[in-house]
Every structure is written in structure tokens, then in C-alpha cells.
Amino acid sequence: MPPDVFKYVGQTSDDVVTQHMLVRRNFFEICRSIYSLMEPIYLWDANNLAICAVITASMQLIFFIIAFACKFDKVTDFAGGTNFVVLALVTLALAQTFHVRQIVTTVCIVIWGLRLSGYLLFRIIKIGEDKRFDDKRTNCLKFGLFWVFQKTSKVKSCLGYTVSLPVIFINAPGSINQHNLPDSVNLLKDGESFTILDIIGLVFFLIGLIIETVADFQKFFFKDNPENRGKWCDVGLWRWSRHPNYFGELMIWYSIFLMSCNVLVGGQWAAVLGPLFITFILLSLSGIPLLEEKEDSKHKGNEQYLEYKRTTSPLFILPPSCYGRLPNGLKCCACAEYPCYNNLDSAEEPLTQQRAEG
Image (tube, rainbow, N blue to C red; front, side, top):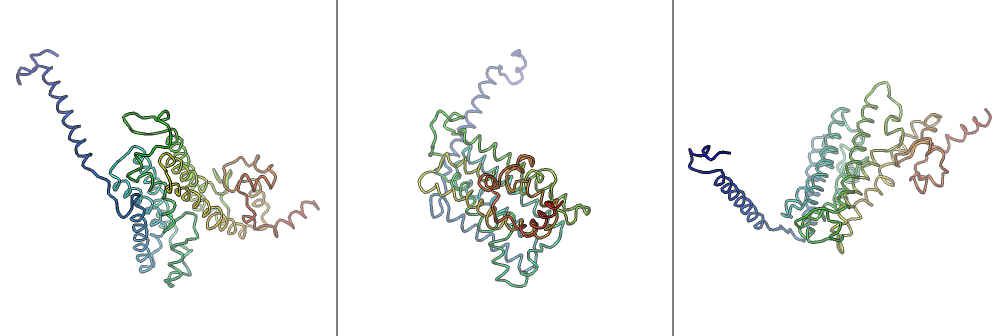
């Protein structure tokens, strides 16, 4: 650029470039100074576990009072999903370190939590009152117990604290100085540690989020269609898995735990309780067993339903043609087809006899 262009200010292009570089350097020095002044905030313990417990209890108490006082069901599921989001954001803010892994993990949880809470809120507004509360709205004790240990497809209420342990430990202030893997697997420079476990965890998270989201909306639109009233959902992912949304959710929480393995030390390995706990809830307590019992009671005697259940995996997304050929023992051990999911023995016997006679 010709020097005469800058005659009106009496400067050459070299002078402008030099001043621009000085401004940039001063800006980064100011940012570095501000960052150095940001000290981690510890509330009662180094991992901020106590404040997370207080936040969880407070949120659920507030939402419970609103729901019971107003007999208002629409905040029930919303309260559970937002609990995860608040814990992730609070622990990130308290750490004041803003490490790339902390930011990525927090963003993942915020996206998942807002997506889930928004969907559940939309669903309950669409369908009206939650029938699970029909016999509990006027009884404070029953309502409170149901609120804490809901018989629902998602882990809500105080259970969210345990499931959030991997996120809490990732966002702990001291986690940026803890590295369980060698520097050779570090994918970033300048002291920012982002390993192959983070990449694998992030990919698994995105896959799980897509599966859960698609499964939720496929079932919602199926049930919303009057022509499908009284039918079981067997479209899309639900043809390949009887509970694909649970499979997606488990992928999400195991991926977050995988990312946390980079920084866990000592007692922080208790974070494994997060994915294990949600696995227990969904597979053994208030997830698949209750829904299987409900569907079995509705469709007992329906040969098409029996065939669907025989050829469709309860959790993992598998081709029906392959799953149907597997022996029962392998289905139980490798595909989570547990005996407690079968409430059809009484209905299968006469149908088996009819096939034999035919």
C-alpha cells in the first residue's frame, strides 16, 4: 500500500502495523491479568460436592412446592432436566479455570439438559395432565415420595446429583492439573490437555444425543397419531430396539464418564457411580421393567406383539433378523434381555399350542 495513503494522519503503513501489534499485545496482557486474578471458588470442599447437593435439594424443593401447591404437573419433568444444567454451569463458574475439557463437557450437558427438558415440557403441555399423579396430587407424602423416586423413563430429582458426579469432578478447580494419560496423546498445545478419550467421548455423546432425540420424537409423533391409538411403537429406531431412547441416554452418560477418566484421582473415581446408577435405574428399577410390564399387560395375546418382542432387542439397536435368531441365554447375557422383562409366559403357552396344532 503506498505511503501517501496515510499522509492525512502523518503515518506510514509500517507505523500502523506496529501500533496494531502493540494494541493486540496490550489486549492479551490485560486478558491474562484478569484471568490471573480469577481464583477458584471453594464452597466447603475442593470439588464443590456440598454446594451441588444443596443446589439440587433446593431446586427440587422449590419445584415440588410449586407443583403440589398449584396441582401443576408441567414442571415435574422440567425440574429434573434443568438440575443437570444448573450443576454443570455452577461448577464451571466456581472453578474459574475454563479448561477446554470443562467447557466442552458443560456445553454438552447444557445441550442435552435443555433438549430433554424442553421436549418433556412440550410433551406434557401437549397431552395435558400427567396420569402418574392422578392418585397423589392431594396427598403431600405420596406426592413427595413420587417426586424423589419417580417411576419414569428418566432419572430426575435428587438422583441427578449422583449421575452428575463425572461432570462435577471434570469441572473441579484442581482437575486441570491432573492428567492420567501421557503427553503423547495430548491433542492440543500450550498446556491445554485434550486427549483421545475426550474425542471418543465427544463422538459417543453426539451419537447418543442423536439417538435419544430421534427416538423421543418418533415415539411422540407415533402416539400423537389417532390411528395408532392402543398400538405399541415399532417405527424407526423402535423397530430395532424396544427402548432406543434409553440406549442413547446411557451412551451420553458413559461418554461423559469416559472424558472424566482423564482427570479422576483417588476418591474421585466414585464418579463411576454416575453411569452405573443410571444403568441400574433404567434397566432394573423404574425404566424398562415398568414399561415392559405396561406394554405386556396391554398386548397379551397379540401374536404380532409377541413376535415383535421376540425379534427386537430391549436396549441395543440391532437388526431384528439377527436378534431373533440368538439363543435366549445369549440374549440375556449380551443383550440385556432379562427375565424380569417377560410378563407374557401365560399368554405364550396357548399361542405355542395353537402353532403346534396348526
